[in-house]
Image 1 (cartoon, helix red, strand yellow):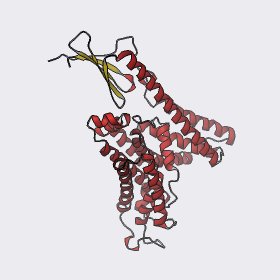
Image 2 (tube, one colour):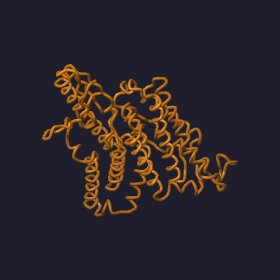
Image 3 (cartoon, helix red, strand yellow):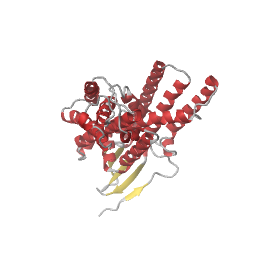
Image 4 (tube, helix red, strand yellow):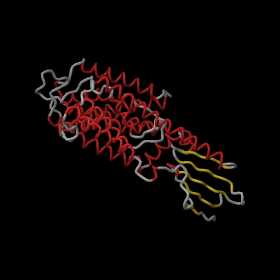
Length: 395
């Protein structure tokens, strides 16, 4: 039997790829940006309107409610982005699931109910129906991507157009109103925020501490290596898109409950806000990187920007321009960061891997290098963020 010894990096030498990320929580930078944006709007509020931006309870409630709806979608979109995918259908799924749920939540007071025989149903039925429609649509996205080879952009773009059209056809362009109190209760007060936080905590734990999370990070980091290692890539991709669809369905149900109506125009551009929240929060469109906590902060930043610009009187079309610039800037920073990591990895391989074997899986790398002293080998393991160690033994 061989003796195996794990050595930490030598004292006094910084670990490979080390930086500030090793000294503070990963989301500290984006959190500081969020605080800075809030303070900027607070200062502008006093300067332009002679009143506080942050000290208005009604405004803060509006911000958190906006963040809750976008955040629920963004939790699913983050997981899609981690796998190097994209989901453009979530905004349209909000409309479709909202009108389906609303049509089953109508009361006997409705003037022109969609289903006269299905009035005053228990709230669980329309809620379940809305989420179920989202799950089915998400599954279709995943099936098309994994079984037919259609790129995620095209598959979800097709679903975006189809779902919006279905919502318009289903309602004939008319709003669906007169909804039951039991149904609308999940959209009132702090309930949307509570639902969002529960969803965020569940998937934060799932990504950090379960096999599901480990596998989707591996798939996003290197899909080929994930397949070779035995991961059922297609199964997990379908699961990710199904979850994203289900969360879009939940967001549609909550939004319909909040405004006490289902409309085919709901959710316009919400998919872009969800993607922006994920990217601003640190998710990489190159895959393999993303955190729910970062996405939560990204959603808050978007909410602050939208509410802040409205507060100081900036026109909505100018807000869209600024939002677009922010998204492009976030993606550009991500691409620059990935290029730097690639160059560092290439230089490391050139200088240290002569005669060795380099294996990569997601953000983790292993180098099996022949021991020139004879008889053994050295296995270097590079974890995410550059933490590394050497394992000596016989192989």
